Image (tube, rainbow, N blue to C red; front, top):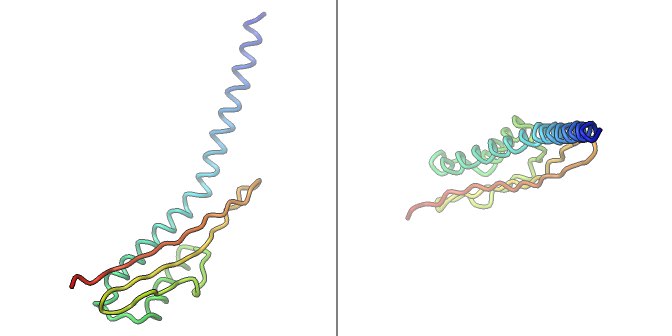
Amino acid sequence: MSRHRERGGAKLKAILWTAALLAGFYVAFKVVPIYFANYQLQDKMQTEARYATVNHRSDDDLRNIIYKEVQDQDIPARREDIKILENSQRGVRISVDYTATVDLAVYQLELHFAPTADNRALY
């Protein structure tokens, strides 16, 4: 008779672990694409900062290029959130500040991102 009780406890434990595992997969499914999009934006910003001086890009050109990437990645940032902090022969500095909201059905998770990129001259 005591074995029968233990078997029921094992089933409950397995159900709870399965539910926790499924919840983890669900959260990862919702959150990982947002982090990946931020990584793609950071990479594009770094590339543009690296070559902006050589390509003689203006502030507006840089802002437009970065904003196109923001739109391509479905990042919830506005054009005004893209800051060209410096664009001169000494270097280029770009930053974007935005918050992405993730709907997890039972909770609204807000993720704040502030990617930056810079390139300094070597002289």
